Length: 281
Image: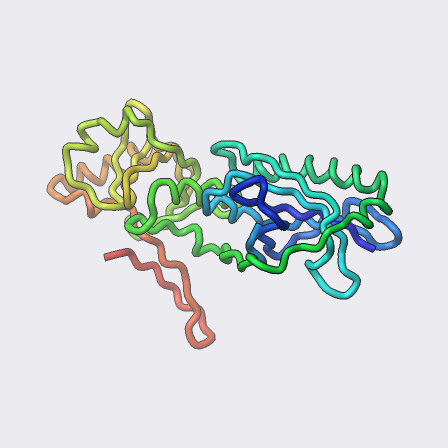
């Protein structure tokens, strides 16, 4: 038989079931009765790809770690042997939450193995209702749509996938990776540079006091501490090396001409890959 650890989440600790269930990645942690293993399954209410990091796309407050037994003939339908719920640490990233769940899963596995026959007899079936498919994470997921996404949505996306797929945008026909996103302090938002002029999504302003780039999105601003354009640059480096020189060369240009724009990644057409990098008009 096989024993698996299933990671999942939900909005309330009292919710039933193992929750979102995207396709798992595997880690062999133990050998038991010939063929057991541990599933690094990730996900609550949702199945298939991507990893459980899609939790951060929403507003879930709790994560669940579930230990399951594998069905002999069918995948992802085994009974739940043990399940525990923990609160998601505020402002945590997917990588940080994974570390917490890994330790919890290991403790649960040891607990079940200490009394395996009893644990198997007490197993309960997974619910068959309320399960949907997780959105697929791809390189295109990392392309920020400044006109459509709010500051909270962008920050959640960064916490979810930033450590595996850096968020991306387009600036002056160059792809820029956004490496260190932060929430903008309320005191910064009162700066006359932000309140005294009309801006559109994607507009970039360097805030000297906090040494961050402020980027306008659908409902406000997000902060950038560093970016990658050929090499890693701090916000100050990007301003001194690119942003400020551009404004000096184009003093009459509208700031919107120097803004971040949505990056369109290559798409497939008739079996061939056609490179497309268009900006939002």
